[in-house]
Amino acid sequence: MLSSIVDAFKVPELRKKLLFTLAILALYRFGSYVPVPGIPFHDFASSFENSGVSMAMLDLFTGGALSNFSVFSLGIMPYITASIIMQLMQSVIPAIGKWAREGETGRKKITQVTRYLTLGLGLINAIGYLLLFKSSAYGVVFSSEVPELLSDFMVVFTLVAGTAFIMWMGELITQRGVGNGMSLIIFVSIVSRVPAAIFSSVSETSEVGMGIAVTVLTLAIILVIIPLIIYVERAQRRIPVKYANRVVGRQMMGGQSTYIPLKVNSAGVIPIIFASCILYFPAQLAALFNVGWLTTFANAVSTGWINWILTIALIVFFAYFYTTMVFSPEDTANNIQKMGGFVPGIRPGKATVEYIRNVIRHITLPGGLFIAAIAVVPTIIFFFTGNDLVQAFGGTSILIMIGVALDTMSKIDSQLREYNYEGFFK
Image (cartoon, rainbow, N blue to C red; front, side, top):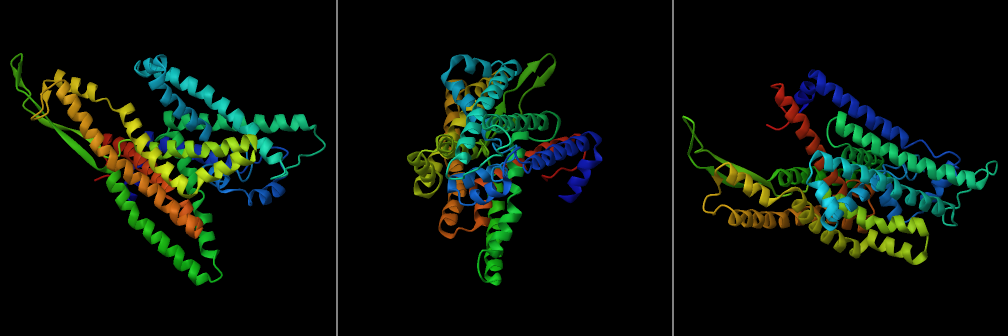
């Protein structure tokens, strides 16, 4: 592992990408501590400590930016929510579905609409947070030296601008850095909370020795679970493909055997992120309207048995949904047939399409249930123990961290192999 990191910095092009990515992520973390102008920081921080579970989870995905009421308080969630909406619209609105099939030109159109939708959602969230934090629940009072209307405008404008800046940084990482920018921003937000969670876990009991023992035991369990998660993340169902012999000119072509690698969890961490955004969307609405029954509903779907059931159902649903979005059995079967290939024992054409579709259905269910279990079980443990370390390393968090880390390492690995260096994966 260490030698692979050293090799990565030996390649000039890859070194520039890595340093650029680290610089953008450092800038993001710096922005998470820059408060919105005019906010009474200390008064707000003490009020936020008594907020509900739903706000605590939103704060987790912003890396503490929300509890600081920083310029990045909205985090990456408006962009993720906009992306979910656009993914769903591809199946509902024919014009958007056509864009998705147009290649690079269509993706640019979808990206542009996603940006505008992100700003719209960011504006709604910003107004909601402003109204919530000015309510009696938080009682944030701005400076009387500035007109209230001007202060409100400044807060909303700063939060929306922060969302646009995060979106721009994520796209910069994707285009000029290493890995998926939006995923890395979520990764950094979650990881940044881990040191504080470890310290809280050690000091939450009156006996320091007991706190250390609980913390060490929790970390040991996490270290045991990580290899299991990696194993499932990299597990594949390989469909064998053979190519018939054919004469092209004077050469005999074909006669080769290969396979189609279908990942057990081909959707990666996307179902977790999508499910989390939907479940925490009521919390965002509660922040917007500050209505008693809506806040109660947001807290109910953010924790407890209702949250556990909905999380499992949504993760499995999005595992199937996203897999069908990114993998087309029809296109795969047609490409195999055009190349003169066939699946042994399966007739080309519709039979091959149905066979591949059935394989995807069978492997997606256990993959979806596995990541759902990893996401829900730590949440249940945290519900009964209240250990901050369990929350920081909760199923959603650890799956996102491992999934993003593996994806980033795979991209670095492929570039290392281009320069004949040994990569991370042996």
